Image 1 (spheres, rainbow, N blue to C red):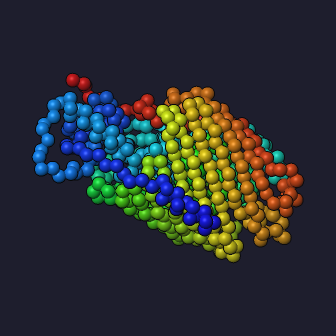
Image 2 (cartoon, one colour):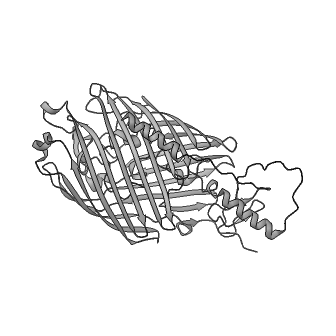
Image 3 (cartoon, rainbow, N blue to C red):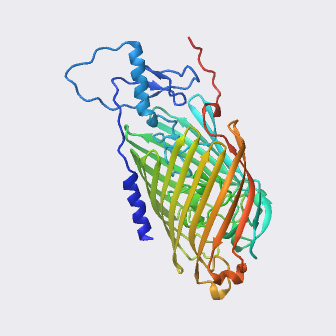
Length: 498
């Protein structure tokens, strides 16, 4: 595992680049949603009515002789060139941190690459912005082992993000996320061979992905810019997500078309639902350091209520987006009494991740994530996990795959006493495909299918049977369309054009 961490940091050095800074002789103003609109003075966009924002420029090199004054057409040409050089710096703002581009925003305060496509619906109320995201997977799933199941269900999640500027350099943000899993999955959750984590009827769940709470996030944030390169934010959630781990799986584009949670979920990103969290983050250019205090206990099985808040755990995370296509993080956290059935056991979790996104054309994108996570539990030692997942989308067609290796303790798999203290290596191989039936009209509806094959030790045959564990499913994937001009609704009439 140490070699894997070294490899991840080597990839940082390979992919890291230096920002190219354009020059401009005067401050220009542009529309966040219509980059072709570039003005010499502040005002409103003639196309949509949004407030124009400054195009960031660096101080020009000193010159002994001034340049002659350009005519209007030349200024327009230079303005367009200036914007082209800075368009990566001028996207819509994140609801969490006013200094972040919206495309970088993910679950909690985590980052994805700046080039990541956004699927959602935007509403503008003057300078205020509301973004809606979500996904639902009505499906039939069949797992072929003794501990498997076949059923019809529908994993789902819904999210809203709202931002209110307090000026040019400060902003309030609000976010809410919910799930109707308990209605569509029942208290036991949905079938997922070798998955572990949380409880139902006072017993440990196994071979099931637990349902999420009705309310997964209700948070407020305040962010402040201190100059062009430095900013800070304060994030408070009840529930919310601390600065620990990569973006939650449903918010990673590499996993967004897969209805199943990773088997390594509880080694990497399971703290995305935490009933009580406070995070302070400091950002300098494309580097961020964060610290959180939060409740270490996982949510209980009463999915409609709010668990009592308690700040008894802590975490820290370093994030870096060295290029527009790359996001890296490393984090560590201490969780006090995370498991309801083992209240005396505490946990240390360490994670590292690399997310690479590459736009390959006007309607083609490739996203890949590499995630490593380690749990060190009191009384049970260390267990590791590695996950690689990739998603290739071209037009209406998407192909995705996932590989993961997880070390699962016998007591989490609810095995017989003789095997409770053993650790079993579990491998999973998933391949899936989705074809969009309806696309780009506000809501995308895709028809898909996937197959998962697990490779496990023979000692587990007595629990699962002697056949190779195979799970297949067919599903609909319903989500908002890819963000573009048509995905934004304005609740303020644009000014009259002259």
